[in-house]
Image 1 (cartoon, helix red, strand yellow):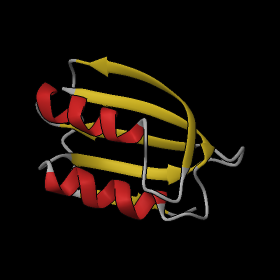
Image 2 (cartoon, rainbow, N blue to C red):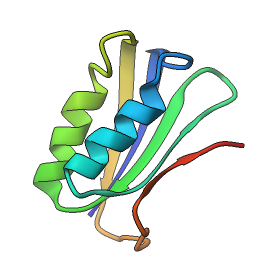
Image 3 (cartoon, rainbow, N blue to C red):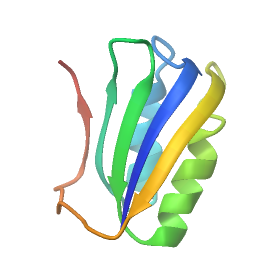
Length: 90
């Protein structure tokens, strides 16, 4: 199963991507996280639904120095088969 999420708020420059990667890895999820040009953060994660739901609950709060104001999310049945969980830097 796949989760796609866009996180809004004060989520760049606060270690959000690093903390997301660590949380996803602790849940044995694969995928990626990246900053968007408009100040939001995008996450694509794959794994079982229970673990994806745990990640989504965490994304709603983020690390202690972030201020999440909203999360848009969708679940999909398909998977891309990522190898690990990476931080994308453009």
